[in-house]
Length: 431
Image (cartoon, rainbow, N blue to C red; front, top):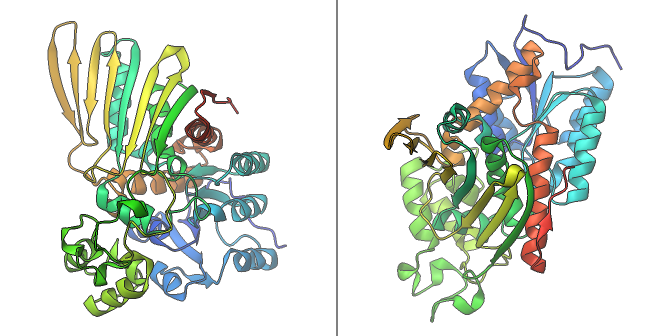
């Protein structure tokens, strides 16, 4: 293999070269930041089996898959300084390990893998190579998270004693992604607590500075089941006589979204036209023949639609996480309780009550998006920038979500799932 500079060598003299493995919604989001900052980064390659996805990435070169990308690496040497892996949940371990062993810095989507053993294999394998590695726990990178951590560090709350955290998935978002979409079944993706709420477990540990040590969890798939289908309903929304009265009607969700966004997320997922225009005829055909037009009560979904986790963190701090499908789709809601004050946060601002002088103050980061379509409150762009900056400068401290930290939140998610299934109190191993 020809000699190439180490992926860990700072290269401030030129834009950082980035390759993308998986050009779906998440991958194209990260690619967007790169194209917006050509003085800092270049998208030199993309690997994806979908030709439309490859074209939409606007990368300089393209490959039909990550193996083809690795074959080119074998022939020519490293093609980039870092690689973003944004494939589906079950398609991370093999490409991440191959890339790291070839000397590429890697940023990968979460969850790392759908099983505990695979997560450990991935983390241990990456750590053995010594390459820079970032996990897409985007909530660590938002201005709002910085604000919450700042308040905690100031000591105004005194000694932290408790956390109450709500993940409001949103009724329509849950129906789209977790009943009809690719995360609807554990054998296709991973348990709900891992696929969606590993973000939240990670965030609780990050803002408090405490490790999750033990937990208990309850939850199940309660509503989106055949026995709850409305009387007279049919298998698909377009043929259903009671569709107009159903809160999870596909026409109610997707036709207004098409008019509002011109075919962007979530419509692009429905029509398989995320990389090109979609019109009403295309959407209608997709709802007629595809999974997004199915009755939510007659899908093949099996992930929990509500779950609660009660935790003990280091130092005796207690915390609860509630994940619910049956909410508006909005920012996470959090309250922190301390010996000298409390904090209430809504993703855009925090309200702090200081018991010492009975004052209440409000601090804000301003309006921001709460979901993937809106950039996760600035987290998507900040994460991409942090990864590129770490490669440009050689300073890995810009990466807030490395392998060890991310493994902790994954281990907590696996423990929560064991508890939910078995009715047990689970200890979360330190590694």
